[in-house]
Length: 188
Image (cartoon, rainbow, N blue to C red; front, side):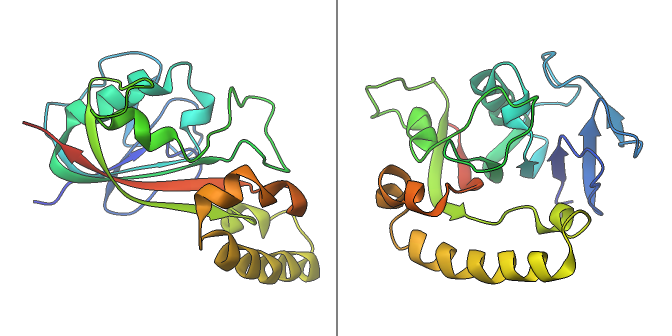
């Protein structure tokens, strides 16, 4: 059976996933403090893991990634969405922003800080107007639709080269709210 894991589900549980969180009012499938290791799952248990705006809240994201590597099967897909360091909106509990270099730390050829676990890098994507499921609950409809439209245009341009955008022109458009990574677990 194809097992999927939703790390830090919060108020947005996903059907067909094992939803894990500690503070959620939505009663996750498993209540666990994600800063406490090991997570209550076996080795090689999940074929897909999603972490949607949770790593930035945790104390040690590299340790979390080591734990995700442990509980994911070989060739599992890991989908991560986190705030880009240039973000225009933030949350007071965020401990950091991320940039395009994050996947490099899981490449054994990266001499600048390889973390000892390997994930293959499939894709990096910037988003100017992220988390629409949340924004539509707080923005007036015209502003929400305008943000969505402008975001789609900027996203197309930014993702021609996320590396160039992340370093240069992201500041010209008020920052990007989100950077996403698709990784593949590699185990010997």
